[in-house]
Image 1 (cartoon, rainbow, N blue to C red):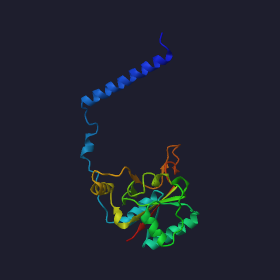
Image 2: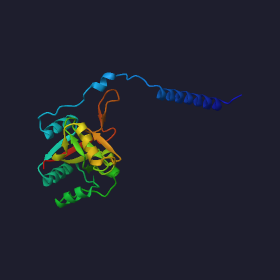
Image 3: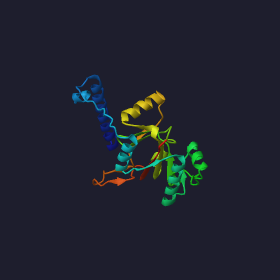
Image 4: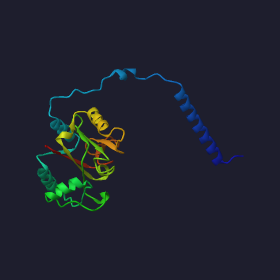
Length: 220
């Protein structure tokens, strides 16, 4: 007589073989496209005459992001210094030496040597800003690694007006042209702070990522 454990293993093995058999069958036999009309749909969005910076700001803030326009680098540092004082941020995480050097030249003194998990806020750059959706395009190459913009409780993204594109397809074309086949190990499209309404359809912010996301745009 077989033991209960042996029966469970045999049933599990049988189920696995059945699943694999169905997969092999599906791969051999072609199936009809369930929604053939989708192949004929043009998902391109016609660009409006609205200024890209204004459009991005409207979309980004409507999705709980916080946007600020900066005249130059000095204005940028002054705004973030003021914000750090208001929010009591004493531990600012940043591994981008260009950002740290530029900020330090204007007297910024909040950069920390602590790990990301022990910091109040993280500052990074980005690849692009997508105006139509209010999305920041981040990558491991431009955003100081894979985790900086995800694990920090507050994320500050610094971008330039020249990084604005209208639609996601424009961003994809840019990335393909810039990197070719050598894409960064992480590319993400972040639209405002992390949020979910999975629990009783109640919107909760900051569940899977930063609770606050700021975008400072250099208008130069």
